[in-house]
Length: 140
Image (cartoon, rainbow, N blue to C red; front, side, top):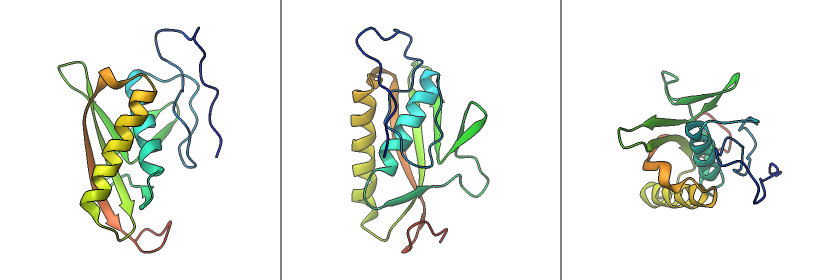
């Protein structure tokens, strides 16, 4: 697994750089808005949790976030009146205890967002289990 170059102490204060670790399946983006960076960071953290197989766009492909010319499938970041963004993840998981898995995903997302310096912009983190599959990478 590779990770992007992280900005050093002299990084620009507008945070429009990719600082989240990358996972396969998450397309690279050179400059991201805070909403896009939150979505990308949350998705990367969720996909790294054991028990999560992949992200899912949902039956109507509504769980997506545009980033450049591509879509991050399985994550939405919705602006709230408070200035924060609520993040919803739509995931396909192995057959494990789903409530503890969802709590672990939320915890890892909060940790990753904090490590990226974006905790002040994160609102609620919702985890939706779109499907359960015994086969890694299978649709169901």
